[in-house]
Image 1: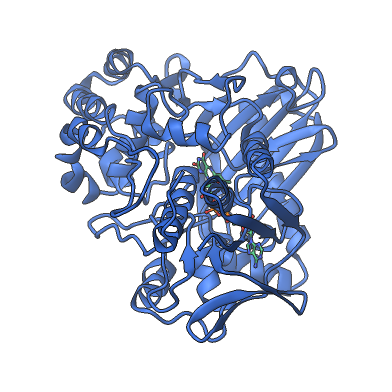
Image 2: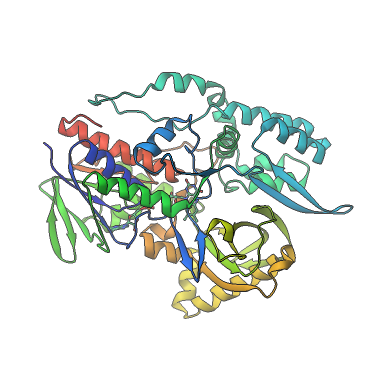
Length: 500
Ligand SMILES: Cc1cc2nc3c(=O)[nH]c(=O)nc-3n(C[C@H](O)[C@H](O)[C@H](O)COP(=O)(O)OP(=O)(O)OC[C@H]3O[C@@H](n4cnc5c(N)ncnc54)[C@H](O)[C@@H]3O)c2cc1C
């Protein structure tokens, strides 16, 4: 059967599923509630500033990684794409008694990193060597790009060699997944090294995620693609449409219609649109309850509700963007620093901030100006919801912005009195624009617990497929693109079609 496939969502997973399904010969239409592609992988413009929100580094941007082939197949990366591998990747700017400030750098080069960290903290030498040995083991680690069993495919991926190369990293899997990033960092005596390590990925993640990320950076992967989120998503949408696929923007799917155990189509604006199969790529956690009547009730969906909704598992943020009429291009672009005066926000004590700078010379701000972004992680969904219900949402956003600005002005005196524009996006903003559960865009697997993946196919409805960030925690754009591809493979296998 070469049928008519409907996809819910034009995020990275939806575009990926659409591209592979279209390449394999299906008629594919994507319905997207927003007016642009990309979902959470997005940025926005305000008064001539471009605030990059959804992409800080791209796993698979390194040419020799299996994932790189996928990003190229879906058109996200092209021969023209410029990739910036900033080194150091991040700096912790620490107040020091003698020299004023101490800058502790996260170099991508492992030997340079080891020498530098040992100079900063000789008493941590043993730990630093262990860290650098671990990073070296994870250089060969990559997200495997595998084909599903019994798939007819034009070109098979060579999985065994890839897995063999990853053996040294895999041997560290259990010990590292038992520890949180915060626990791993706490073993270092120097507070600046501790802060540096906890600012790479969320400190509540397991240490395995930290090492995977550090290995990725050290391997020459994890670059930032010029133009960021918007270009990545636009390139994929362009590839999908060039293949003959159709995207309808501003079309929110209200329900996926199930008739006699089959997905019969979707309902949009009261109208029924028939389909031979549906791929749901909007947040699975949200979709299982909102897109189906009755809600999906299969073993995996019940497990998903329990595991992902437990406290601390949902990654979300308040995202603060500030445009300043000051040229900061002589400064490092990614800094973490402890606050002289910590402040309270939504029941949390904010003791440090991490900012990223983007410059006018690269098109992120008017000439001679700079864009600053700050990602404040934490489950503040209930707080913001309450503030909105009490009618003080805007006021609380301003209060947060002012607290952050006061801290930033101490760190970056050049921005004093130079703010041209500011913006605060909260989990409610992400919920509204992307339809994700509580505005969450990734998932934490608590240290010491099994990483659970979820199926791509409904157990009860034969022609209903799922893809996206929730299928393989922790999620992110690599998971989105890979799960979209895999959902298309299931569709091909079930339809007896060669996957291309
Ligand atoms: C601030 C921030 C920073 C991040 N940093 C990184 C990073 O550096 N590296 C990285 O890899 N990842 C990062 N991520 C995570 C990454 O962006 C997401 O995990 C990934 O984009 C999820 O893609 P997805 O396609 O699974 O889902 P989504 O992005 O959620 O896409 C789903 C799409 O479905 C649409 N939709 C929802 N409901 C409906 C409906 N009913 N009808 C029609 N359409 C619907 C949505 O509008 C959306 O376009 C970041 C995310 C954020 C927010």
